[in-house]
Amino acid sequence: MRVYLDNNATTMVAPEVVSEMEPYFSQKYGNPNSLHDFGRETHPGIQRAIDRIYTAINANDEDDIIITSCATESNNWVLKSVWVDKILNGDKNHIITTEVEHPSVLATCKFLESQGVKVTYLPVNHEGVVEAHIVNSFITNKTALVSVMWANNETGMIFPVKEIAEICRENGVLFHTDAVQAVGKIKVDVNEVKPDFMSMSAHKFHGPKGVGALYIKDSQALSPLLNGGEHMGGRRSGTLNVPYIVGMGKAIELATQNLEETTAKIRKLRDKLEDALLEIPDTFVVGSRDNRTPNTLLISIKGVEGEGMLWDLNRYGIGASTGSACASEDLEANTVMVAIGEDPELAHTGIRLSLSRYTTEEEIDYTIEHFKKAVDRLRNISSSYAKVAPTPGGEAAECHIPQHA
Ligand SMILES: Cc1ncc(COP(=O)(O)O)c(C=O)c1O
Image (cartoon, rainbow, N blue to C red):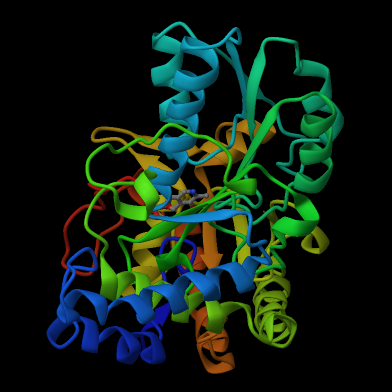
């Protein structure tokens, strides 16, 4: 049996999404900027996709939704353009973010620091969440932007973005939220939360990889990241990736309609898995269930190295994640568990399991059984061996691609 429990990294493209995309590869393949019919016949599909995104996040007509190539681009765009607009060409010098953002925010902040920008990385509490009042205490009259994620990719913990947005508004500071792990998992209503900017990525909600979006409240000014043609009203240049845009539109519609019903089913399965795995002695799950996305579970198993566990699960056909970055020579700890202040040894034991609307009860039962077997095996062998537990092919466990997804 193969069980995919790494849906926070990416998701299966929904079959309905694939069928809506298909005609745009081989029939309606014109460049949307061309004046002839080949170009123009792509317009209704693009418009429908953008309308679906507006509806899914409850955006207003005055707001902008700009298609990007991914959420990494959306995050880079906001941070770098606020730097240009408000710091280089303004009188601000400060950006606030958190210690547990996705690397597309953290690495961009590091780059901005190298350019002289002052960046504050807010700490998280024992649940892995930034408390709103802390944001307030770090804002100064030099703060240009606060960037805090809506939900964390490792733990699924949901951040108090509505309160943070309000604090930013009161202080005249722009607020950006990375909602990649929130869209399609919990209600994301920009009219209620009122962020200035919000990043999204299609492949996290059963759309294709390589397409994302940036929501911009009231279509406010933000220098383009990509200069070139007049695509997307001059806000983001590059020939539109029509099939992927169409796919993202269908995917967000599917992911957000009947949200409560769908997530109730996912939550039930996640809770069943969590309860069963917590029966294993010396385990704990990061963050309380009530404030977590319904599909996510980051579990620590004392004495069991995360990478070793990942490869044992892989041998049973179960795809999970350690949530840590794999450096070439060393195994790194889970960054969120480190930020929470977990013992460094425990921070090496995190395993993230993330479900989707396609996860079945049979798969969860299979995972419970084989997860327990893997823990027994790894606890019965030396911890040094656990670090290089054999892969299905017999090679030592190696990770060439960082797992920050
Ligand atoms: C919270 C978060 N932000 C940003 C990203 C980057 O998204 P993308 O793969 O679209 O660049 C991811 C996933 O990798 C993520 O989990």
